[in-house]
Length: 330
Image (cartoon, rainbow, N blue to C red; front, side, top):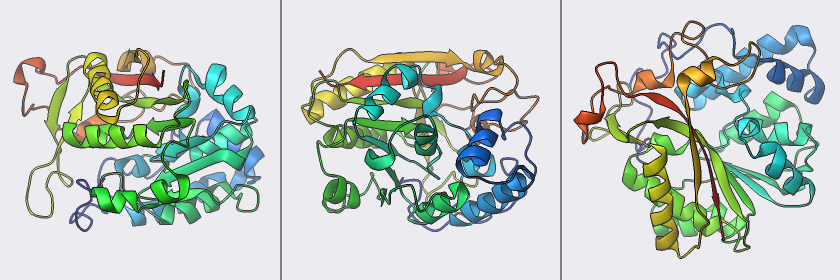
């Protein structure tokens, strides 16, 4: 996130008047989220909403990510992955390790534990060290969940990264499963390549080790400028992000595997259109709600204009959805 956060918080970004700062909970407090807060965190039902608001505002004070304003820390992205029940949970139960990169408040790891995974080999990493204490405060499990949070910047220069927490404390080639949910699409293409190459360096050398997750995707790849307040660096340089189609996302991982010297099986990348996600049953924790329920979505942060491929953008903008992917070492 170095390119996203190369200076102080942009002027005005912490204002609660932005459309992605939701003042009241609506569909975000799903059945799954409430169950975890009641049964795992032991929070009385009548106290849950006030507890969520208090933690959200503390997280907003750390950095005003739109996902924080929208309560996305109540959404369990890993549990929605097609391989969660068939591969991830069984491997965790049998003793494999898992790193959640870009973990925010650790919601996916707590869902794993709630679903039966032992916590001993679950690890979290994010840019902000403050998220460690906030995650314990949110889930109220400081005594039972291990202190496995590694604050680090995967976009730092090479010397800094090599001496950082991920490489020094977790170690290269040591992690059986690495999860990246709604993370890579924060960056332009060059920085995405940098991140995925470093992820492959952290991945275990054992055949079958896997990187999996999800991110915002499009039918046709496009580079998009960001809108205010995140549109420029401290030096005034315009920021862009690259949004992938399944084909371009697959090519990027193949190129990263060659660059890192990591042999990969054929990559699986599934595009799920927004209308399919929006059609999910009421109460289902999809992570992408229908427009009539949530007037703002993360897509509203991106300009409809393309900086490199104007022909792929329709008048109403690119066709968006969610990419679910798995990258397995051969």
